[in-house]
Amino acid sequence: MAHIVIVGAGLGGMSAAYELRGTLGPDHRITVIGDGERFSFTPSNPWLAVGWRKPDQTCLPAAEYLSKKNIDFLPRPVTEIRAAEKTVLTDAGQKIGYDYLLICTGPKLAFEEVPGLGPHPGHTQSVCTAPHATAAWGAYQDFLAHPGPIVIGAAQGASCFGPAYEFAMILDADLRKRKLRDKVPMTFVTSEPYIGHMGLGGVGDSKGLMESEMRQRHIKWVTNAKIADVRAGEMSVIQHDEDGNPKKDYVLPFSYAMVLPAFKGVPAVAAVEGLCNPRGFVLVDKHQRSPKYPEIFAAGVCVAIPPVEVTPIPTGAPKTGFMIESMVTTIVRNIQADLAGKPADFEGTWNAVCLADMGDTGVAFVALPQIPPRNVTWAKTGKWVHLAKVAFEKYFLYKMRNGTSEPVYEKYILGMLGIERLKEAKPSTSSNPTSTPT
Image (cartoon, rainbow, N blue to C red; front, side):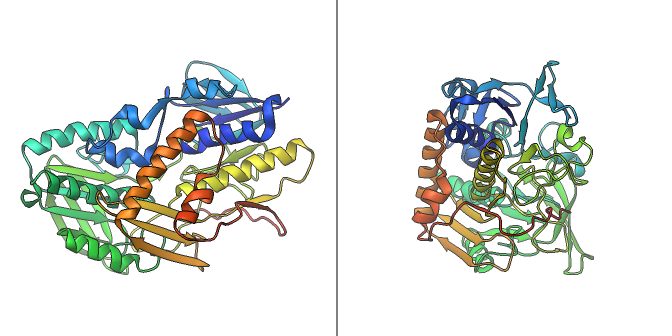
């Protein structure tokens, strides 16, 4: 009997636990270690931050549902990974051995890289976690009593731009419903070289599409932006030209601000010698496996993926739900093969599929594969995207409550978008170079 340990109880970690149990059956031990008691559906955080959802609607007690599938759960942060010993340690002094380790931690939020960025002790809100989004809702309620300028955006080095766009559009929609939009100037600040870049080099006509949405909603923007610092009610921003030279300085006043930070690897993972790149992201081959530690796999935001292209201000490549799902399936199939003494040579499809809500409408982006040149590049807008994201939220939470290992994106989302289903993982027919991270 093998013991498989999963570090992280988010979208990747919970999905991996259920898929492992469904694939391997009851004969192997599975343990999930999460930093806290609850699973949170991260894509709902922008709604949570404007009060369109409550925490109990988007979060659930992980132990209760994992136990129904005979999966152990430890609600403690991991403080150390001893890869040579095949053990992990928690902050409570627990020492857990493993035969296979899945790292699905998500990122460390690098607010400290910009002075004054982030909540407590910074001056900006965040929608990166459910607690952050809940705090953002509290700040938003105070703002509604005294409306003023809003600044939304993504800092230099950010790789997750979708939620920033979503939150700007959702705020616009919410303020219009409250008849307050005319009292609130809005500015979008981003390290992207142009609106709609998304860390993907653009997807279809995403530039024109997103610029049109911003103009229609009277949202000004500053691209190629580096945030110098943030003070109470004021943000200093330096816009750069296409060669990366400072071009224009802005001092943007705000009564409310939400800025997504750059990501790093979590300390316990980043500290393992030879496991990660300099930013702390896990190096993996095409099988989601560490080249140095073959019993360690990784999925999700913690994985090292190179930027799609060089930009004047650093941007990273996003890891969307479709990609995470593909990574998880690849890992599960490779562990299954390894346990059976067969070649663990399945490969995932690193594709980008994103449903971005805009409050009363939405945008769907599809880039297959994520890194150009692509077989499919597609972007569409419509109210149906908003409805699709609501349906996706409800189904994914249903899946988490029922321990279903069904691949949601591959089975439903591509079909809904009218795109032919893609095989999630396949046996390798070539060599497997390590990801080249930055």
